[in-house]
Every structure is written in structure tokens, then in C-alpha cells.
Amino acid sequence: MAQAGKGKLNYRCPSCFMRDIDIDMFYDEDKKEYYCIRCCYHGSEEDVLQKNQMARFRYKSMLKRFDFDDDGQKERK
Ligand SMILES: [Zn+2]
Image (cartoon, rainbow, N blue to C red; front, side, top):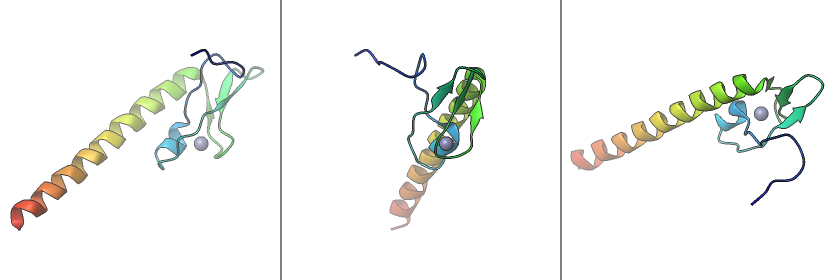
């Protein structure tokens, strides 16, 4: 499905994503930057992509650790 309107692409805010908040950022054409209306994060597309990747990686390893803890408890029982 095509996305109309703001920006070329919608990126989620990496800063909010770290706090479990999934929010799209807006694009400031003057500054060529993406910015978040919820927190004060703003950055270039490159910066956003990089931070999003970091956030995803961290989020994933967090989930992994929780799974591992669960298993540990089951085994102890
Ligand atoms: Zn944000």
C-alpha cells in the first residue's frame, strides 16, 4: 500500500522505540532532518537508520535474555 504525505519514508523514532513506544517521525525539509514530536530526538536519515538498527539489536537481545531467564526458572523447578 502506498503511503501518502509526509516525508519520503516513515521512520520510527529510535529514542522512543527504546522505551517501547512505536511512533513515526516527521521530516523537516529545511533542515533535512527527521524529528520526533514526542521526545526531542532529531537527526539525519543516516543517523536515524543507524540508531534504529542499534535499538532493534538491543531490543532483541533484551528479549533473548528474558527468554533465557524463563527457561532457567523452569529448570530450577
Ligand atoms: Zn521520540
